[in-house]
Image 1 (cartoon, rainbow, N blue to C red):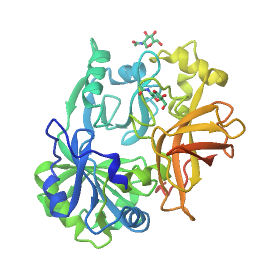
Image 2: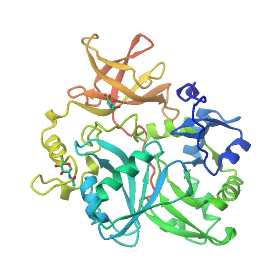
Image 3: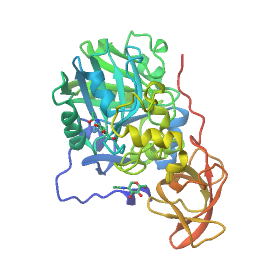
Image 4: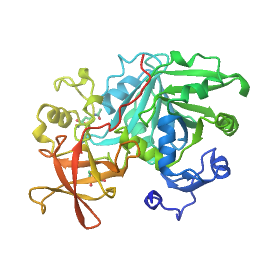
Length: 390
Ligand SMILES: *[C@@H]1O[C@H](CO)[C@@H](O)[C@H](O)[C@H]1NC(C)=O
Ligand SMILES: CC(=O)N[C@H]1CO[C@H](CO)[C@@H](O)[C@@H]1O
């Protein structure tokens, strides 16, 4: 059923990640995603089973379509000060932070994970695949006249997610992974693969403990195969990736966030650092609009919320109505899925809803295939995250 959300037919040839052949040999059902051919499911492993496997054991996800860059130079922090609402000065070396890229109207150009490497002049930045060209042009525009260098990293990016992630990966390195915590990064050596160096970040998109590992393309397929020899690890496709991230309350850019939505409307106010909240000194893109919204929430017309309902899953575009006046539209669904982790055939999703209806516990009507069904606004994440914190 999930497959219908994707198209296989495309006028332009799809891009392939370095693991394309491996996906095919593992029985990957390939669909179009952000211009790439990506596996949605693997033969013999259902959406629900692969979702649960990740929560109970570990899943391997190919996320090589994401854009990885090294951004370096004296003016990297001044650049980030213009285009993000986050203060990267206090971030410790080898730590990362979720942030957003902002246009001058305060709209979110993309969401991003930014890692500080040795010092304030060296960063590793991961942004979304679907926004690759737009993001690169955006960075270039704001870096004009600054001492900032961009280097695209052409490597394979794998996410290993789930309670067994550390055990699976530890066999390949002498680095003590138990000392690398959520939000930390490190280069690690894999002796079995010519001492190749991998960029490791602890964290992920599923709410589970896990890692994102950037791997030189020439060893990526062999390393992925070697990892998969561990029976605890199974390859997992886009279908479960979407339901896992929804349970974890994570946004999918282009669906739950876009160019016209501010971080406050997107319920991401926490990415705005305390040091960036003074309207007298803040000078990031869109700061006047964003800080005004922070100070006076009545300026926020709609905001991102989570919801739950029983019966069929709500999909992107489903309209949301007021229970007390069912003709009055109050919102729209931006993502929806079954929630394999919650008891009792519960479906979950994210929506933008008029202020006043945004509080958890508010009953709403969600129109699915011409029938209005009762749902409820609910707090995200829907599951308790299991990040490995210090
Ligand atoms: C951005 O998202 C909002 C909320 O879903 C939607 O109303 C709006 O049409 C979207 N804008 C674009 C340009 O996609
Ligand atoms: C550095 C920069 O270009 N800042 C701009 C960001 O957006 C605001 C509008 O909210 C402009 O006034 C700034 O000049």
